[in-house]
Image 1 (cartoon, helix red, strand yellow):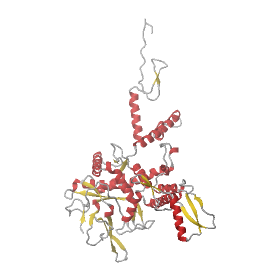
Image 2 (spheres, helix red, strand yellow):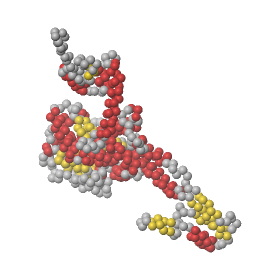
Image 3 (cartoon, helix red, strand yellow):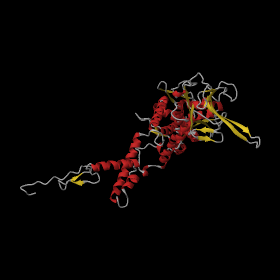
Image 4 (tube, one colour):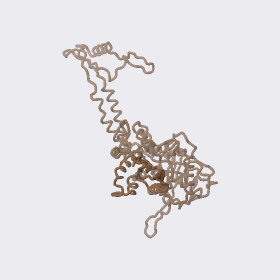
Length: 527
């Protein structure tokens, strides 16, 4: 089977098609990936037999109310959608290339983001990747004009594509040890699904499509099951607590429906009546006194329905002669129905498995930002987790940017290998949160600065205060010193308040130009 798509290392044999995936903007497709082609997996409940079923379980669990709320917290922290601001920007400060090359790279990155409509769909892409644990895109390239770079980026349903790694080995004649001679990596795409009854087999003539490695953008969660060589989702650890929480909630509902009402037990004295007559007598008494009101939700009417009897109704029991006679007792309802400690326990377990702070389960009146005493350990761990998944998601940007820059001849593949480690991607954070945190930190630093100013020149230096207290960079310190020198040369003193030489007792504020003393006035030869 011929390889479809474009390969950076292997040129030529261009196919006539431009893409095997139709454009999709409905968001109905989701993503998946795995290690071995015919890899199977058994989850904790033994329900998932292959990767397609496992992804289906991930998506099913993600639709639970508690899990969905936790996922939204994670996605909103990782990708902030703020008006007139890019969700992800490129930072090339650590790359040692000319400024013109940096500007070109930034422009190409902006074009790639526009192709993906990343500003509008960043939240959707990140959620798909987080839930499924993998993300596939087809990099559409005009093979007749490869120097135009990527012309379109299209999402691929991960259940229809899989990465294949063929390892060709060769045995050493002398030692008998097999060595890896060649490793061939490509992707297999099947519109009917990889695990369907008509799934493709390597080395056979099938309807599957073999795709070049460089034509597919592929990013995983980074979580690998080494036993089965499979990539897992971040929801994998949440599967068991989510199922347990669902069962506990269902059990709670059943218990409350069954035990909530107080029911009565009627012991009817049937005397010495035969069995059939006793049963008929009991039924007559029950129909005479039993009143069953039913609410019809379709019409909004309340009617009397005496045809059926459910387990939630009263009990009618016969009693023979010689007993206590007719008696009515009350069966109490369930006790302590307001206790949900077990439900709360499994909710905490669910949030802990997703690294979401448990404190976010409770509704709070406000948020505290900045001071170390107000930051919980859970929030700190959550912040580090968000930084981790951001870095893993950024692999997608590296893949797209590498292909774009090499095809357009901006850099070579060797240049890319040298600079890729220094490329940084800045994810936009929530504006209010960032601003509030910065204000609180600045307020704390200013308070500490006011306490250290009297010791300036004695125990601490000005440079130490600016660098370790105010946290200024070397560049900022240099700019401040330059501005102070310019102001001092222009006759302005910003160091300390001064006294007006022409009006003793009048203190001038900082930054006021130092006035020159007025010349003495001569009167009749006397000064």
